[in-house]
Amino acid sequence: MPAPYVVAIAGASGNLGSEIIKVFLASYRSSFSRIIALVRNPSSDGAKALAEAGAELYKIDDANLGTSYEKALSGVDALVNVLGKVPTNVKDTIFDAAVKAGVKVYFPSEFGINHLISDFPGWDNKEWTRKRAHLHGSLEAGKGRIKTVAVFNGLFIEDTFGPWFGFDTANHVYTSVGAPTTRFSLTSKTDVGRALGALSLVALADPSKVPDTVSICSATVSHAEVAEIVQRVRKELGDADQEEIVVKSVDLAAFREATRGAQLSNPDGTDPAGHIRIVMGEGKLDFSKTNANEIANPGQKTWKWKTVEEYMREVKGHPWC
Image (cartoon, rainbow, N blue to C red; front, side):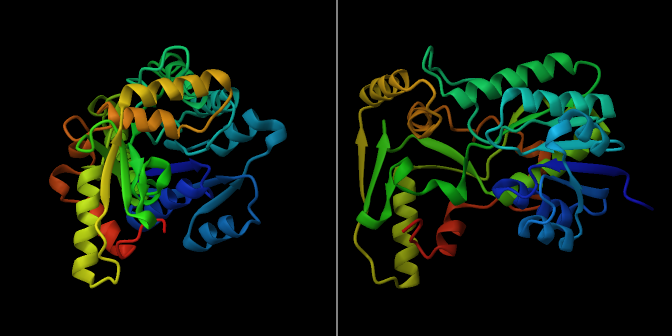
């Protein structure tokens, strides 16, 4: 029996998009007869690698964006948008094309913190403001026409444990904003892909079973817990570096005010690290109690979510250093 659905991924050759489409190609072939990578340069090494893995490439014409996407999405059931920092009007054009083409399920380019619950009045990160506008517009315009599902996965396990979020492993110092025991959620890029595949199938079968906004997470930890994990892994692996990691903290209110000042002095700044550290310190990045993990992967029967300890073993206790 042929696979019933078709999925397209915008931004498929990018950092996250390439991981997502690899999961679809490896794990969801039986459900998707065509897995389409929407790319601007099919001659790039990344695009060629996807084609060799079995993806169908479709070249997007930037000069005729709406028409190009509408043609590309003809016959597509689910669209995953993983395009990064592109203007809101571009995302809106892609969404409009999806509606016109008859796409049933749309995942906008979110995949990070839940900016719907962040609190930065007058000094929000501009990229989050743009994402919020696109999401609200898609939900409103798509009523009764297309199922929009925003997926918030917290931080990426692979990209988190560096100095930008207070993890200075090379110098044996971890610094949290607020209490070092405050927990935050992370998801591996592979798990994001797995969850998108699963949520696509659930939403295509019955859109009412998937909320318009969902959180997922592979793991939830604190700065203090990460320090313990790294030290335990190093000890078990017999690593030469057994120096204790010192866990420190900075005052949340003071850090928040400093970040506010920096954003107001540079309103167009798009580096979200300061804002994210505030959200981490406020506990708003803890998705452990309210998430869609059971919708995507009930009882972890389809796959096991990746843990921080598994990642630390992969990097031998030396993340980003």
